[in-house]
Image 1 (cartoon, rainbow, N blue to C red):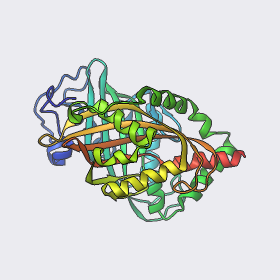
Image 2: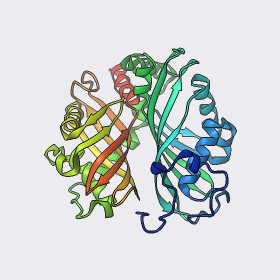
Image 3: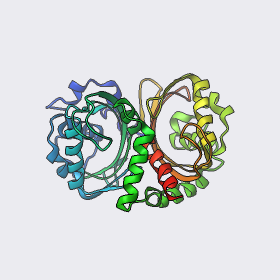
Length: 365
């Protein structure tokens, strides 16, 4: 954790945007070999390049800040190369010309030699004024969350894991989420794509990762052992399904902001959500793929966990009628820990892409 090593790094969650975008920031706050001199730390880098590309509409900068052969991982398949990133950004802004990407937090880890890893929690507001991948323009406004995890080295993003709440976006645009997923799966079949096959290697890696954290012990001090705490929580809640343990892991007032616009309060509502997922997904294996941690206020800390699930859609309910589909979920969570328990959580994954996997399986039957 970076709480002692770099105490003056930009704290996105508690700093006003005008201060973060100060055109004349103070000097370097951390070693950043190969990064442009204007960037004072990794959080500053993420906030500034996001603002330039999306708010100043300098879309061509995608080629400056993304590697030519870099990869963005999503639940709908990988995106490769800065040119494709630029093209996709332009397409998104044609559909949503007023789209904003407001940084709620940047949680980071790493160093200048191996690269810095950032987990960027974003709130986006937008109006649908052009046709999108989901359907014709609706003129409706929407607000969704995204978490973008980036591996940054010498001024470039070389790898990214992108989790966007597309189900919430589709719903707010007035479309039926299940219907859009079925339409996307049908298009995939016509064009020769198979989302389940595309994600098969990720599913296998997740099963191996779940085995690696099986039986993880709870650390004595969660704030100072974030990796161990994250492994313990994911293993207990998702692999073991021991939901009686929730009050020991989550504050009784926990606020959980989850996919498809779900906003839950307290451990009872959180338990009901977990029960619904377990009821729908059998043979569930969950893996912890990356953990980062930074100070918040006082003794509180913010932890970012990228994690994944491999399972079988074997039960009716939250994701529709049981299909028997093998499914994969790429997720990222931001947890705010106070006194050793999670007081607030933000979790994002592409639930639309999950339903698309299920529909792909149905079409193959």
